Amino acid sequence: MKVILPPGWPRPKGYANGVVARGEMLFIAGMIGWDAAGRFESDDFAVQARQALRNVAEVLREAGGKPENIVRMTWYVTDKREYLAAAQNVGKAFREIIGAYNAAMTAVEVRALIEDRAKVEIEVTAVLPDPPIQLV
Image (cartoon, rainbow, N blue to C red; front, side, top):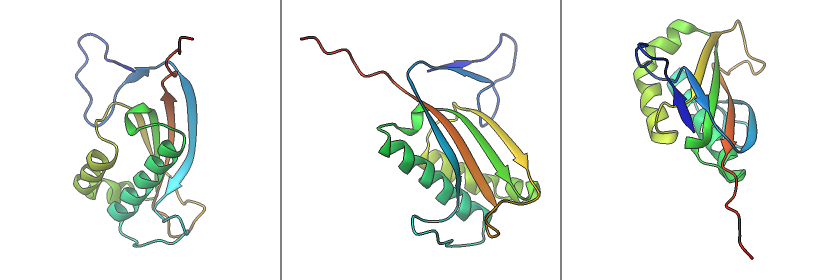
């Protein structure tokens, strides 16, 4: 994966302007802040974001990928002020679960999500590296 930063542009905080990657593409549906049983632990934005990121990481692992294979994330949030107020805790969760901020990211405020208690939904595209060629 190669992060793209045009000459003279400042390094963005929390995301990449562009990413180039080669391999098998993995498209992860929007993950919300509930557990594997479909239960919300909390209505706190940062808690839900942490769980949504865990859910993303779990799908990645199931596909044989790792968080560093993420090339694009789209965050849908129901309240941008709540998102911004939780930024420090969300950033901490992101660093713990995903790691570096190398994905191209977009955050969009939406009126509502399909699950009434959901405050954030994270959609991801990852590119899994091609497996090494095995010599016979």
